[in-house]
Amino acid sequence: VWEASNAYDFGQMVKAVSTTRDKAACAELLTVTEPKKLPALLTNKLEGDIFLIFIQSMESYLVGKDPGLVYQHLFYLSKAERFQVVLALLSTNEKEQVQQLFALLSASQSQQYSLEELESLKKVYEL
Image (cartoon, helix red, strand yellow):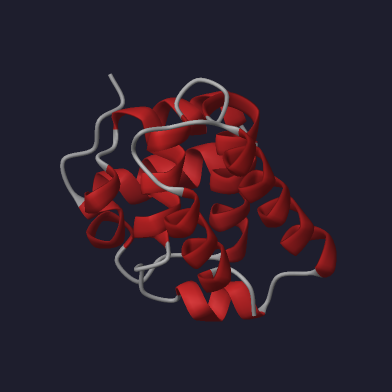
């Protein structure tokens, strides 16, 4: 079982999936992690590589199954410390990956978010 009870454990798990680039394991970790706990679990440890594996895992494994969960994770990820810094340092290619995830969310129907909410969240991810 992957669930992290504190920021240290979560940090170790994130580091492990980030180092191995294991998107399936990362998706599993995101599935058992309550989205609203994300900023507290990440503390000030959000880095570009972590951000990207979250985006890629959500795109590869979660958006088709549970777009509502993806929306929640993106919403709370944007509240994490260092989010603006990480976003500012993304390459053009990496920004395109983020936009692609939003495009998939737009195409998915979920009762957990409206298109207006999705649009306003998308703006948070655009610099």
